[in-house]
Length: 345
Image (cartoon, rainbow, N blue to C red; front, side, top):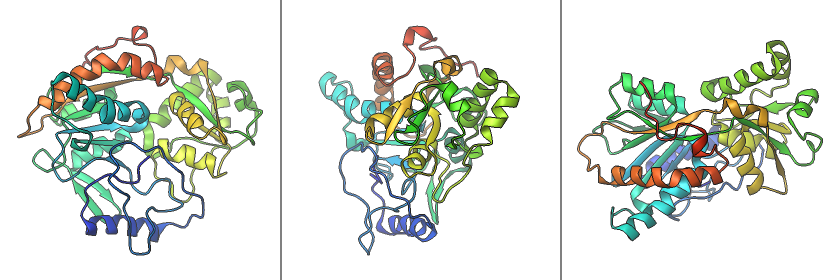
């Protein structure tokens, strides 16, 4: 995925990357992440390095301008980015051009894809901190979401802060956890049972991503019983240099760099990364985990002084396209959950 596609000032960019490089003690290889959005060039600093080598990523995921010029800004939990970003940055601008419903190009869109806890904390506290750099986020600042995409509890927290303009509507449901496997070391792991019976170490979302981690732990407790699940968790690799507590970065990074041969992550992400790096990674589905999948909802925010036309058009587009796009991306079929249901906050 892109290192940075933001119109950052030179001083902000240098501060962020300088801090990341200074603090990095890892010698692991950087990954060739999937790239989305218009090619605006990579961030560079004086010695020619254009990313924080060895880190799971040089910056948390921000795609698009942060100077206030975006016509549509979306803050979302990041675990569905392989489906959302092509929809938002490719299909939606094409929809605007073909229908005349909206005047939006890929360069007019900003998407922030971070863990839910980070999205909620950033909106409640007034911004994000990246090393020594700060990105203010508020209803009267250049960067504030027109739309948020989160689960039930995070939406409730935003609603308690009077940040939502409407009841969120459900548009996707994932299928629970899966396994991302080192193709060579983990070749004997073919299902959930063989993972459980092995003695291989694995990586999983950290306690700083409580939402995802608790889903995985609850799933294992239900499938195995608490005692056996606790025994399995003892094989976890809890930390490593460069870890960011962003599981859709950390897990493939750890498996690709021999930190652990197995990553426990949402199945659609495991499938996506195995397809992106097929020579190194394999996906093992866990059908038993499907009942434990959770929903993602979307809502407009109480953003001030902003034309809502782009957000309204995107919502119309999203509810037309989500059933097919998310099914193709490994999510649950729309007819198998309450697609379009309003969350009761």
